[in-house]
Structure formats: structure tokens, C-alpha cells
Amino acid sequence: MSAETDRSKAGIPKLADVARQAGVSTATVSRCLNDPSVVSERTRQKVMKAVERLGYAPNFGAQALAAKRTNTFGAIIPTMENAIFARGLQAFQEELGAHRTTLLVASSSYRPDLEEEQIRALVARGADALLLIGYDRTEATYEFLRQRNMPFVVSWAFDAGHSATTVGFDNRQAMQTLAAQVIDLGHRRLALISAERRDNDRARERVAGVLAAMADTGLAPDDLTIVEVPYSIENGSSAFAQLMARADPPTAVLCGNDVLAAGALTQAKAMGLSVPDDVSITGFDDIELAQIVDPPLTTVHVPHRDMGREAARTLIAARNGTEKVSSLKLQTQLVWRQSLGPAPKTG
Image 1 (cartoon, rainbow, N blue to C red):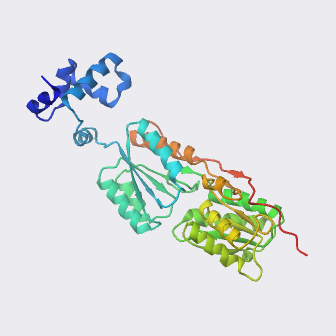
Image 2: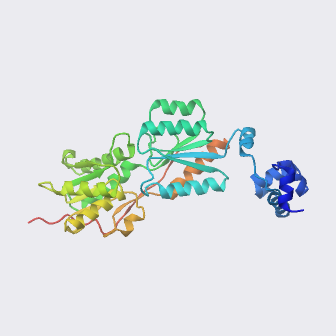
Image 3: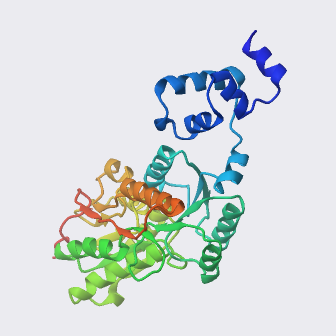
């Protein structure tokens, strides 16, 4: 009798059908499907042959009701339009996959109201835990998560004073280190192309880092020219053109991320400016784009993959309740490339 005949006569196969076909208990079938490492290879092969022969598919809805979990995590990121979050999210998904957990991803477009809707929707659909980017959201949203005992981790930021469990890095400290190096090279006319700071604590902290470095060296904070634009290469280009049109243009333009910096470099070339001889440009994140632009970007390396992997491990532990979870601060590194040089000498 063919496998197709088996399926058509039996209707929708059940776990008990697989167990009977394989000559094992239903508990063994369940272990084989959910935790194959605890089942012998011989038994696993028998079970999987029965699964294939019968065309069995686990009823994840029933499993979720029984286990009071869906093995689905949610992640809400601000944007999918560039690679800022891609590497970290990939590592996050890989770690979840190793624990047989599925990832659902939503993009808030940097809109807190949309992010709140997405949080509520993911919780309503039974997500076991959530990955959130940064701290900026209403207290009502945090209270909603607490009331439902929803495990969540904040990432891409780090504030030791915040109550939320966090796996991330200190944006202010990272940008302050970069800005201090720029100033040490003799630059005094500084400008910053930043993301919009409203509802974006990462952007605010990076601006604060530049201002802190200036204060440490006696430069007046009011001397920093800041242009705020949404993250894109095109916006980085237009912001750079705006800065260089000033009567006293900057000798160094720091950018809130590598995408904006790539736009600034493109515009510099279009304007006939030499980087870094005429003007220095720096980025932040160290995504692959930073290495292939001309000249390659001096930037801040963010440990995206480590961050994604550790965020997943923290969330899994929080969901399982197997151990006490705590925040984890990861370190960034300054990456020197050719886009940063000494301040141009004036006549």
C-alpha cells in the first residue's frame, strides 16, 4: 500500500498514529520532534520515517495550549530600510533557531505609536518574549508588559539605571571616544549629522557623547552644528551639502551612523572635496558599507552579532525561568580607516 493510500484512508494523521507506525510510545514521538538529542539515532529514524510516511505535521496550536507557550518570539526594530539592525537580528534568529523557537519581526518606522500597536499585537498572538530597541516608549507600554509577565529585553542601548533587562552598549561613551580622537587630531570646527533625537534615545546619547568630548577639551557646546535627518544615504548627502555651504564649514563631520556617513562621502566627492585632506568624515556601527565606501570609514564597531546572540540567550532564560537574568553591557571599539585625518592647516 502506498504512502498516499495510507494518508487518504487515515485522514489527518495524529501523534498516536505515528507512534503506532513506529512501534514506540507517543511520549517518545513527542521527544523526538521537540528534543531529538534525548532520543537514540535508531529510534529517531524510525519515528521520522513514520512521520514522512503518514504526512504528519505537529499541531503547534495544541502544543502551545498544553505547554502555555508558542515557541515564538517577537522583535520590533525601527527600520528595515538599511542594514543597521540586520547582522544583530540574524544572530538573534540563529540562536532562537537552535532552541526551536520561531522569530516574528515587525518594523515601527521610528514611530512609538506604531511600536506600541505592534507590541500589543505580538502579545495578543501569543509571543513568548520580545526584543525591543532602545528605551524610548511610554510608561503605559512598560506597564502593559509587566502586567502580562511578558519577558522582554532592550538592546542597541545600555543604561545601568533603567529597570529593563538590557543587552546592549553605551552609545554616549562610544561616540565620546570617537569624538575625542577627532578633537585630538586638531579639529575644532565640528558638525554632526544625526538621526532625529525625538523618541530615539540612541541618537540623543550619541549627540551627548560628542558634546561631552567637546566639554572635556574646553570647546563650547554651542559651537557644534547639528543637522537632524532620517537615516538614509540621500539624507546624509543633503545634510553634508548644507553643512559645507556655511560661511565657516566644519573640518570634521561626525555622522550618527555609517549610512549617513556614506551619503556624506558621496556628496564630498560630488563637491570635489578630498576626504580627509579637506574634511574628515566618521560613521557609527561598522556595518559592511563602512569598508567599501571610498575612502573607507573611520567608525565605531558595534558588536552586532554578539548582541543579538546574547539577547536571544537572555530572553530564552527569562522565558524558561531556568535562571536569574541580568543586563549585559557589551563593549564597542573605535575602527580607524582612511576617512579621518588631521585638521587641515590654515594659512
